Length: 313
Ligand code: AVI
Image 1: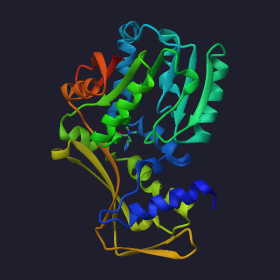
Image 2: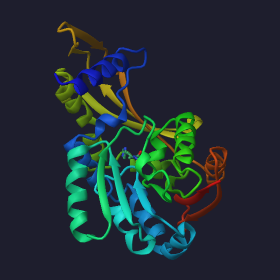
Image 3: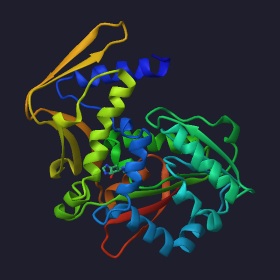
Image 4: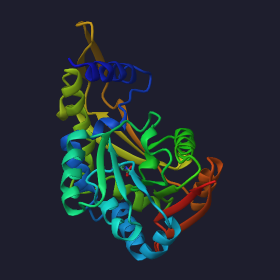
């Protein structure tokens, strides 16, 4: 086992053996998971992606005017880099840094994009956003951090606060943050977005077990588990879980070579993701608390989704 998988196995052993077993959502994004997520974004029920695109397209000029200046566009969850590339003509960055957890997928996307935009200096960085960022070579430049798609919703609120503080510090007094976030709305709309009838979200959720098997050598069987997602109104979040369809035994090889048995009873849950939904007011306050100011907001006619640009103060 390579060093990275050894560290990840240790992390998974801890989270899977805790009182409330969980798998971090970062494990969704292996090659298959990244592609399944791309399909989710095309689903009729999954409104966030097309709604954010509508806002970005419709308010393109106003957004570019708010951003005003951008030496480096730092794309914090680049994926296939499509969203950032749509900004290139209006924001005109001199450099583009694409960050994502899925390295191979990202490298291919950036290489393709570089051919289309040869004048923008591009680089790809595989990164775990739960850790602090550091770009000493671009400290002095005017940076715009771009964090679309409501990926911030997958952070617990206190972690999101810390993340914003880190970004504000990374700006070194210049630049800002362009971010998209999903808003609180009718529960039915939220429910369908995470329980699509084609079963793509279910496949995305279940695929996390295949990735865990690949990384750790465990033997999760997909037929033992089912997708379970619901809106937790008290916490203002969609929760995704995998629910055991029967009593299940799983072997998780530990680093020392001794297998670690995991037992689940029928109905037991493995928590895989939270997706927090904010009100505009709460979200703006959150940015301000972290050191961002002059927050400008754009939304769609249904007020399903919010795009904000905030300068570092
Ligand atoms: C990436 N993230 C913002 C998605 C979300 O909506 O929380 C991940 C996702 N999970 C299920 N469907 C989409």
